[in-house]
Length: 60
Image 1 (tube, rainbow, N blue to C red):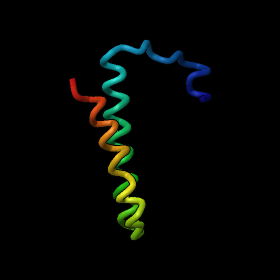
Image 2: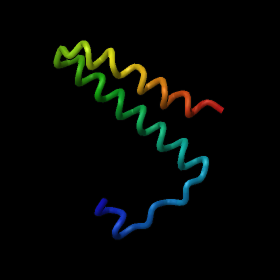
Image 3: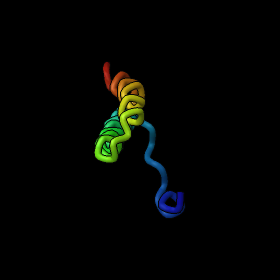
Image 4: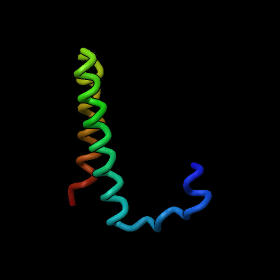
């Protein structure tokens, strides 16, 4: 990624990993809304396992 050519990747701490999972859930939610808007029922249905996986990573 070009961004990381200029800026180093952050050290992988628990807080960084947690934040990464939160951002991924947010992204998946946006994708789900767009799929719903487009009438892509299968895409909406298929998004649930990915969201569940990311949310399970947030649990202590």
